[in-house]
Length: 347
Image 1 (cartoon, rainbow, N blue to C red):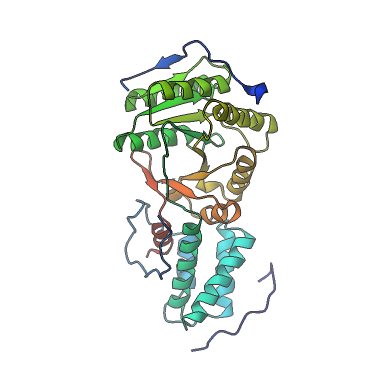
Image 2 (cartoon, rainbow, N blue to C red):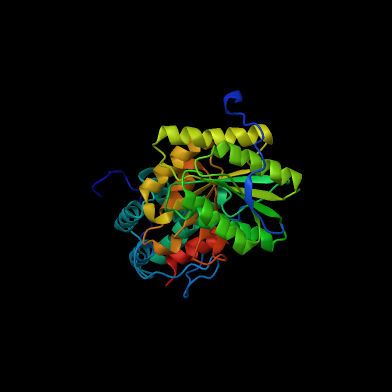
């Protein structure tokens, strides 16, 4: 290994400034309104997993891991070095990689394992447990009205994810409104209006260039007055290193908090799984400014890497709530750590 040296244990060889007064009635487009799983090994799957609807891939991260773990061969130091390289290449990150490999080696030793299959099962279980430990896949709406603030850079599928979650909540019998607080782009408001038409829900909006905080204020007020279960707030896409824009996003959050204490219930970062380590930088930036409480990974089955899921859970301790697994409005699946691991290791 060129990037670190270490001794390997011997293996068995066998505020007030932001307060927004209620605005005149906003322009609306309106229609009628677990515990972590117990520790267990993961069997080698022989077919594509169906838990999250992810399509099996025959190249990339999972394929490389499968090629390393030869079932009847002995897992050696060289085997684990290859695993480290595969994890790093998949954007898991250096620190998380070392922790995962060390934990998997120790687990295999404790179980008396020595083969490639033993090593694969140990690594799969460690990955699954790491994701489950931060509460991935657990989403609770909470008391009404629950405010869900969506953040993320342009191009991640944020507005579409809002529509998918709204569709899911409606299917559970919840009453929902959408808030178009991305007032920088007229197209963003129109896109949310179109989704509102399709879903049959109210869209709270104002003119292009209006104060996003005012839109959020109006949306929360509407949710209260109409006894809605949830309001989903869209925001402008912004890079995590553009401080002026991030300050505006933090202002939106404060406006919501002042209008309705203990809200927003969730601050959801929509993250493109294909962005790799840049995605981790985005997650850190947004978490620092607005306190991200959960992540939706989009395009997960379109990436040959996928290690960003592990990197985010490890670095931030923030759960992955959902995964976007397709383009239709139904294609938003609760993130299932075990199904994710099966997808990685599926034949």
